[in-house]
Image 1 (cartoon, rainbow, N blue to C red):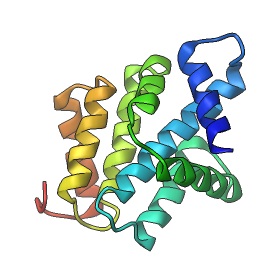
Image 2 (tube, rainbow, N blue to C red):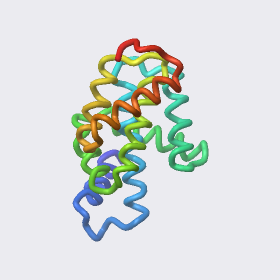
Image 3 (cartoon, rainbow, N blue to C red):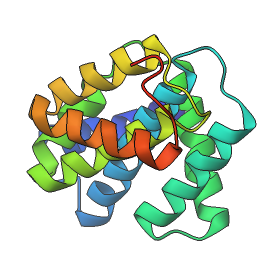
Image 4 (cartoon, helix red, strand yellow):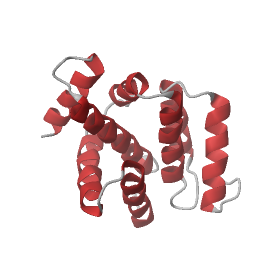
Length: 159
């Protein structure tokens, strides 16, 4: 099942005719959710607050039902479990999304990173790496980081 999901993402990345619009939308959702899970796990402490935030953000951002958001989060978790590199997912998003959509993904990642009330150095590093791979400007990335930090009600701890 995991290999099948990753294969569908690969079809979209390669721009083959086998990948239709629903597949593209699904691949973008899965790629974004995988990156979100990867950031949540970056500090080796994927707690209940982060999982709840992850589900809420997936549901809100993609307009999914609670059940569909849970299913997507579970699929993303399975894929993230075997994740070696974020390149396959960032490549898809970079090719398929506008600048604004990529910035929205970065905003989601910062919100996940701050979900537990603090920013771990591994979360910070991973979000910055993903932002670079998505070609989101560093200035915009820092603005989104500060917005997520303010929304989480945290100070300047850890980042």
